[in-house]
Length: 229
Image 1 (cartoon, one colour):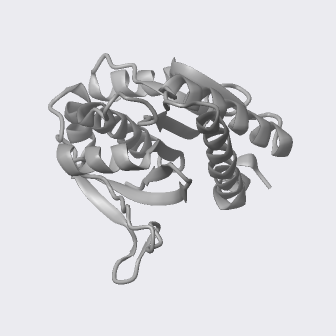
Image 2 (cartoon, rainbow, N blue to C red):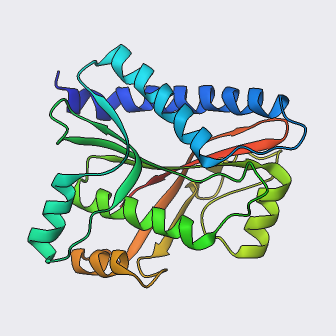
């Protein structure tokens, strides 16, 4: 069985579930060590990279986990097909052995410190993921958002962040009885930038984002999302 076929059917489901479980544990340990919570995005990126690297190499050692870089084949596609000089950089990518095949992309934001969520930064990450999903339809495009429960709930309520979420501890946040898995459509031009221009060229009018696995800790909640275009 090819890596690609294996990755899409069971491999990614396994590593993502392990990521949520292990990342939640790392966050809980870090919070227990601090009187005043202050966990920045770099901590979450480090732990995510380490967990993904361990899981991927354990099952398929030809895969590479790469952090904080652009993807040249994507840049070339954008330039050649749409004549735009864009080189989107991503927090974490899972690549094939030749560093060309793109299996998964992760963007990460965090509300585990005193810094409030920035709505525009979140939408920019989602736009970048939507571009990857449009040009690499089989790639898994994930957005990770952990945060202190009370602070993140307040940010969602006051800043109008239009992505799927629930803070009801008595409800399974992954599932809505009427609508199934929670899915929202975000206009491609939620931000007027070069990414929205490219999405328009590609023909994407709505970015479909689905709430994936979540984890509720004692003081925090971890949301993970998948772009489904």
